Image 1 (cartoon, helix red, strand yellow):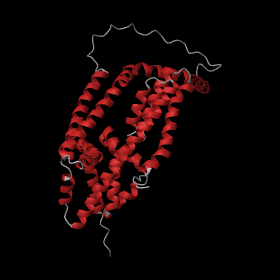
Image 2 (cartoon, rainbow, N blue to C red):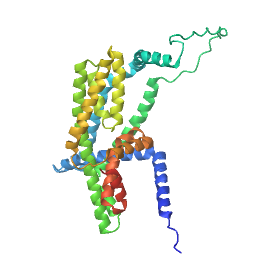
Image 3 (cartoon, rainbow, N blue to C red):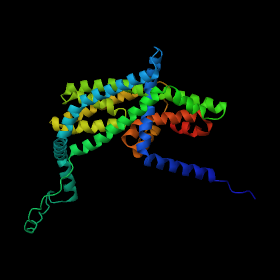
Length: 358
């Protein structure tokens, strides 16, 4: 009589996966800065390497690169601060106006629904008697504790953001200043020549794919942001520069960034344009530009290096958003590309390559 199959390895894999997800969730403040620093290290390491070619030490090259990246970030933040601050200050009024216009548009449909349900507004329906008078009004309550304003919430989150940014920049500088030390240490601790060769191939291929993805995505987003800004200016949408900059930033978030931009365009469209045709014009133009970018520009620009199927990309985005929030969404594609490389190079992880690949 044959013994039943041993299911312990599968159970151990499931337990390990659950514990890993729990550790990533609990330790997000520790893991997110390291993951972001590694991601930007893959992007900026070729620049430091090029500066080494002109006899500039990695320490000085890393200083130049990090300060340059910080300057670009500050310039972009300053360019966005004015329009975004204006948008945030007007957001409650804009949402209220958009809600009122949506109610006006939906009112005929509500009447049709009420008529079909036989409510009071329908022909032939009887009018309900007025409700009895309510109790006398109560005295006004005393002063309530102050509710945190949107500005205070933004300032609190802004402080955390600045602290996280400083942490990422310090880690990035140390990684860039160390040169190839990080890769050499990782390869050195792996036993066996075959394993060392595999780790070296995985590290170099991952660095190349992540750097190419971030660079190509940035260039594509610049072009898409310019196209969106010009289109918004042409149709009379306020703050076209803000929409171009928001497009550049939000398109780093697959799928969700575009959906957020469409929602924002709808809200502002309801407050700016008088009729529904003009309201839908801005989101429609944005969707046309995004569709052309996704189906014409991106396949040609990325080439055959980043072969991830759309369903796996969406699942990765949702998973890392659940685990790490907005930073996880930004890191989802680099992490998926890294797992795809591991699946291609390591036979025991070939299932990852099959699930993530096209």
